Image (cartoon, rainbow, N blue to C red):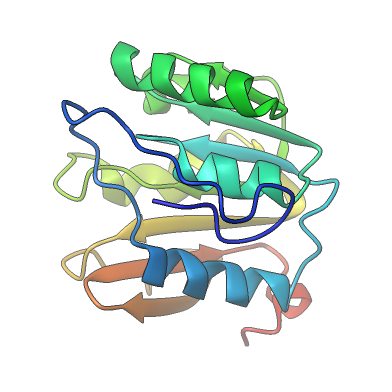
Length: 184
């Protein structure tokens, strides 16, 4: 996989073959960042990447000069890979080895943008928007994005503003300030 834009554009990152994560496809990643680049300036934002897997979305946010990127990943091998890759590329990326649901409940920080890419068959994926808004870890004008399969539907969730499909990949967007993002 490669970093598609920003400071590290074109850098290829090859995770070990034994990693069991499902990285976001380049097609879906390009579509997502095209949407974001037309709506917000990523430079200077604080970003939280939950269920980081191989870290590819974290690398994209860091490459586009987010002020801070926090990658939360439960699998110790995946977390070590993200940490090593960030160090090798000298990226401002902080890795937390933790269960994402517990992290949401305990973190004291707030973020401008939260990206969640849980395993598509994970129990509790439908609770993510509610948990994030209840625990107030997304800033008042922040943006939450959840990557999911077609079997999940967030259309009736509070603060849902938009959904995009890229093949089998779905992105659902949430914000308390829909007007800021011009989705509605």
